[in-house]
Amino acid sequence: MNEIKFGTDGWRGVIAADFTMKRVALVATAATQILADIYGKTSGSRTVVVGYDRRFMAETFAKKTAEVVQSLGFDVLLSESYAPTPAFSWAANNQNALGALVLTASHNPASYLGLKVKGAFGGSVPPEITQKIEAQLAQPSALASTPGKIQFFDPWSSYCEALGSKVNLASIQNLISQGKLTVFADVMHGAAAGGLSKILNVPIQELNSSRDPLFGGGAPEPLPRYLSQLFRHIRTHRRQTEGALRVGLVFDGDSDRIAAVDGQGNFLSSQILIPILIEHLASRRQETGEVVKTISGSDLIPQIAQLYQLPLHETPIGYKYIADRMVSTQVLLGGEESGGIGYGTHIPERDALLSALYLLEAIAESGMDLSQLYQHLQEQTGYTSVYDRIDLHLAGMEERSRLLNQLQTQPPTEINGQAVVDCLTIDGYKFRLADGSWLLIRFSGTEPVLRLYCEASTPEQVRQTLSWAKDWANQNQG
Image (cartoon, rainbow, N blue to C red):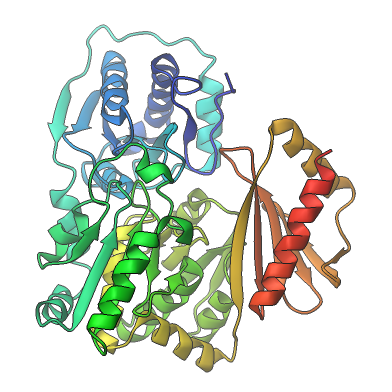
């Protein structure tokens, strides 16, 4: 079995190989003890929230987790159904709990399950706490003389009410009811199923809403290769209703990541959505605060922050770093390239349903398609770019070590014919090139995968740079 190590958000493993009942019990025990040590005095709580998504056996592992927490003498709020991970983060904060243990593997392939640890404040615990949990795994634990109580709760009602209060629901509802806006929601067989309908209370077209632990043979990740059905629906609707507004919203497996499809059927990653959301919050909603981005975020993000005179902060990849910043300062928005976006007026947690509501509000109040809003921002800043990312699957962790050693000892000085002018190493290796483009090379925190990111001025430059990076990786794997 692989060692139990926390990645960018939680511990994940292949079901029955690494992710077993015995190991989940071990992690749940350690996590509960550390949550009590860290948040017990300030919260005065002895309660832990336990939730789950729609993955294979997720509710069974959640029940086991609840029983373990109970045996340690803590009370448990156990979800009565699947729900988005942010709903459990919300519950932890709203119910004054020590935190939440969520059984989910987010966007990972179907063979994976995982456990995310959320703090009493309503967000992912920072790295120093996950390190304490890892260290605690080797320590003995004793059962309590008096076990705690397990109580079931509805994770949806309070959460949906909170999200709905943050936007002008009437403006969105009116546009949909009048037939001026059609909303498609691809929930990718995941935990967002039914969520947008609960909040909006008007008809939308939800795709892939059934539970399918195999995720249609793909993975519940909001990437174009998994969205052929949504593309077909959008393009069919466009042919049938020219002139009307339409949007596709995409939610990952546990509904903490978002992507979108515009009215013409074009995929919009969070590199496009984050600038749109900053502009909407700062201009239409007149909100303020710091913009927090990860190092893989688009260079347009600082341009928009400067446009609205908003301070900017950059972090390593992983929403826990953004959450940590949100706890310590006033943040307007914190977002990561992979689709996780959170807001200072909410809990310090990425939340795809809230992002969806803000995007719908931006459409309703501007009367514009998402791509039109993005184009307007490009014109305002004079900055145009193209972004893409590819994941290169490695044969194993030995190849990962070999490539990492190559980056540490012999980093490239030229990439695709462009001189390297700077290298940022707060997370992976981000090479800024002479023509203003950049390439980021980093390793997944949960899988033997090399992630390659690039932003440049043309699609051809992006393609060529990523191709160069892929060739470099293949040549250096041995």
